[in-house]
Length: 555
Image 1 (cartoon, rainbow, N blue to C red):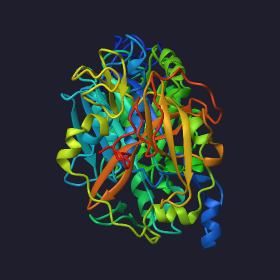
Image 2: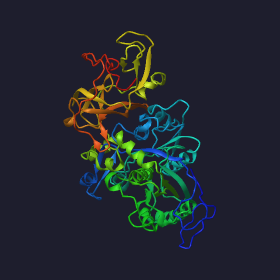
Image 3: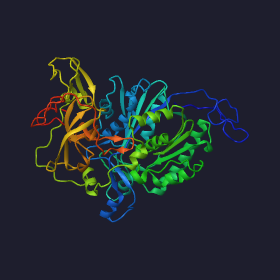
Image 4: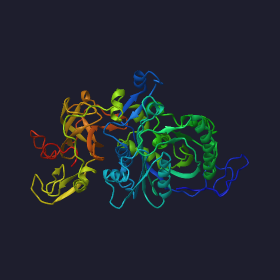
C-alpha cells in the first residue's frame, strides 16, 4: 500500500529524515504503526534454454561474445511464461493453514501478448486453477505498464488479494543489440493484507512525452531512437522520481539497503545507477550478463532477487526507466525469513539458482527458427485445425488446470477425468483433483528422431503420478541422453501449436526443477496407484493416456 509516512518529513540535527511522529534521532520508519499489507510471496521463471552471445558472433562475425541470454523455447510464449511464474508464486498455497489465500484479482502485463482482442489473463486464470469469482485483466503495450500492474496490486493489498504477473519475450533483428542483450522470462507477486514480507512505504514518478522505443501494431521488432537523446531524457526523470520516492517514504539515500535500476535503455541506466548517492555495495547485481535484459520483467526479477537476499527491516528501492521513471520504496518485514524458508522447503528456485543453470548449447539457427526469422520447411502433412471453442470450454478443467478425477467410492484416479470409474464402475461419484503441481516418475519413454519438431528429437513419456494415476505425454526441456526410467518429472504449461490464429495450450512434462536447479538424478517416487499395462496405442487404465491416437493437446 502507498503510505506517505510524514506530511512534511523534517530533519533532525544530523540531517536524517524524521519518523512519522516527527521525532529526530530514530532510524527510518521507526515509530510508525505496524502495517502488514504488501507483497506476500513471489515467483520467478527463467526458461531452460540459453543462447550464448558467442554463437551469434560466430555466425554474424560482429558484436560482443561474452555471456548469454535466456531464451523461451519454441513451445513457450508470454502466457506460458506468466503461468510458470504464477505457479511458483502460488506454490505455498498448499503448504498449510498459514499459507496465503488465493488471489481475488489477477493482473497480467506484457508488451508481447499472445492475443489482441482477447484477454490472455483468463488463460493464466484457468491454468492456475483460480476461483471463478477472481477477476482477470490484461495491461499490455509497453514496459511501463508492468510497473503500473505491480503498483496496482500493492495499493489494493489492504482490501483485496491480487496476483500481479509480468512477462516479456524479446527478439530483435538479427545482429542487433536487442537480440543480443535482451532475454525472456516472467515474475509474479502475490499482494495481500496478511503476512506481507515487504510493504510499499513510498513512491515517486516522472512522466514526459518523448520518442525512445516504439513499435506499431503488426510489427514484431522495436524501433529505437538515437541513444544520446534517450539518455538526456531519462537521467533527470529518474533523479526526480527517486528523490520524490525517498521523500514520500521519509528516508534518505544512506538508509537504502538494496537499490535497483532497470530499463531497456542501457546507456541511461548506467549514469542513473552511478548518480543515486546510495552507499557502496547496495546496488543490485547485474544479471544481464547471464540471462539478458528481460524488458518489462527486469525490474520485477531484480526485486525478487533482492527479496531473496534481504533481511527484515531493510529498505529496497526499485527505479524503473520506461517512457518516464517510476520509483518504489519497500521495507521488508519480520515475515521474510519464514517465507524464504517455506519457499525453500517446497522447492521454489531462487533467481540466482535459475540464472546459474540452464542449457547453453542452443544453436543460433534454432533460435532464429523458434522466433520465426528462419522459416524451415514444414512437415508434409495436413495443417492442424484450430481448437473448437465449445470443445475446449467443456474440457477447461482438464485442458488448462490439468484436473483429473478421483472416484469417491474406490479412490481410483482417472486421467483425463471420467464420469464412470474404470475400477469399480461407479457413475458420477467423482471428485476433481488438480495434478498440475503433482510430481511424477517416468515409467517408460521413447525418443523419436523422425517426428517433426522445432526442437528434435521428440521425447514421449509415460508418467506415474505421486498418489496414483498414469498418463502419456510429451516431454520438453530435456536432454534425451540424461533421461532414464525412474527420473522425476513435473508438469509445465506450454503452447502445443497455433492454427488459424488460435493458440492450443496444454501440459507437458519436464525434468524436476529444484531450488538448486534441474535435478538430473533418478529417485523413486511414492508407490503409484493401480496402473494396468499400456496397450499398443498408449491407452492406460489407471490414468488413461487419453483418446486413442493421442490426446496430448488436451482436447
